[in-house]
Structure formats: structure tokens, C-alpha cells
Image 1 (cartoon, rainbow, N blue to C red):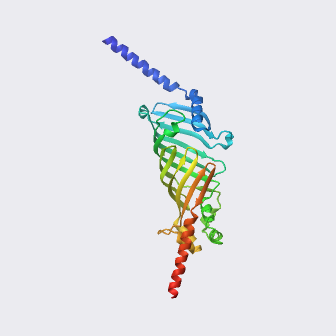
Image 2: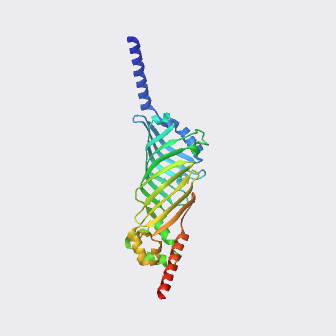
Image 3: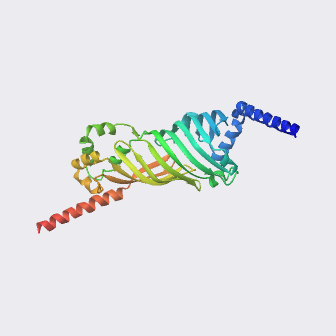
Length: 314
């Protein structure tokens, strides 16, 4: 029995040493090429990864650098997605039950450039639980389901000023847009001259199913406005999001003082409200205010005001 114990203990020690050597010396870059091929087959895109490493000391930790994804036939300078670095912490036990539970996915600087559409950059901090019912590359993305939370820091929409785009759509009243711009508070006038939109930190829950990412309670805020809404983004890069744009209280007051007609599209808190639709397929994304809503509010209210004047005249 003593010999058996000694042999067993020796084998276990050797196995632990071997496992330790494997963890320390494992080079994930040996498998980088195969990983890139699988990703390209699944997404139908070109994928580049400069370096990748794995660590098993605290669960499964993945680190990658120089990540880029582009449409086939395009040059890398026009990559659809770029990330200087990526760090992911994955729980090992759920993997045995065919679940991928990402405790944290950190991308300090993510850039999304859909081509002719405005580009987007942010820092991404994400956690989610993933289930995949098929390992076939044709079915993997279709059968993938997940729930999670995403936090975005330093988010910026380049080449588009959302406030300016919204105000420009109010041109159904002659001279209104220019009048608004001329009488806007100075801090917002400077904001209107920017060719980008900067957002405050964003915290969003999401769900992935049927090949789409769904957001049910989306809140996006900037210095001049905030958006609330819901919608989805498909794996085929098609977008369908409905939001309500609310202009901040002090700016709403200034705009209403300049153009009293705008009080008819303000909510009960005095915030100017404008429903908007964000739709299309990358790179042809359209951000369209619901002009029917605006026109209806303006003209119905104008008609009611005229009716009240006539009744008072009697």
C-alpha cells in the first residue's frame, strides 16, 4: 500500500508539473492561423490578428492585439472594425456544459468604420453568457444566443452632428432653422459647429438571438440631448432602431423662446421631443426624424390655437 501511495503521489506531482509547464509554455499563436480561418468562414469577412495569448492561472484569460475586420476586396485602411487590444476572462466550468460565460471583455479603444456612414469609436466593457447549439460554421451564428450588459466609455460618433441633423429636419417652417441657430445659447452654438457627437457613458443590456442583437431599453445621452428607444442590429449589418430624441431642458427653453411653435412638440416636462428611425444596411445608414409626427403636432396645435382665437372672438 505504501508503494502504491508513493507511485500515485509521484504520478500526480508529475501531472501537476506537466500541467504547469503546459500553462507556462503554451503558445496560442500556433493556432492563430486556424482561428482566423474559422472566423473568416463564419463572418464572410477578412480577419487580422497580430498576436494572441492564453492564460489559465485565473480561469481562462485571452489577450489579443492588432485586431481588424474588413469586407472582402477592401483595403485594411478601410477596415470595418479595429481594436488595438482585447482582453477577455472566460469561466472554465460553464464550458463543460457548452456555455461560454464571459466575465469581462475589455476593449479600451474600439473603432467601427462602416464606410460612407458616420464612424463610431468607444471603449467597451462587456459581460455576457453565450450558448451555441451547433458547431457548424453555417449554423453557428444562427444558433448563437446570449444575454449580457455592455458599458461604453468615451463614445463618439464621427462625421455626424446629431443635434444639427435633428434641427435641420425642422425646415418645414420657413426660416425656422436659421432663426434657431442664430438665437441658440453660446455653449450650444459651439456644439452645433462640431462635426461629431460625443456621448456620456452608456450602459445597455442586450440579447442575441436569431442572428440579431436586440436592445430593449436603450439610453444614450449627450450634452445637448438624450435618446431612448429599442431596436436590433443583424449579423448581415442591417440596423432597425426606433428612438425618441429629447432636447435638454435649458436648450428646449431657449429654442421655444426663439420659436414658440416648438412648444407644440414638447412633452409635459417641457423637453422638445422628436421620434426618429435609424435604419438601413451598412454602409447606407439613414437617421430620419418622424416628420409626420412633428408636422401633425405643429399643424394640429396651430389649428387648435386658431379655433380658440375664433371662439374668443365670438
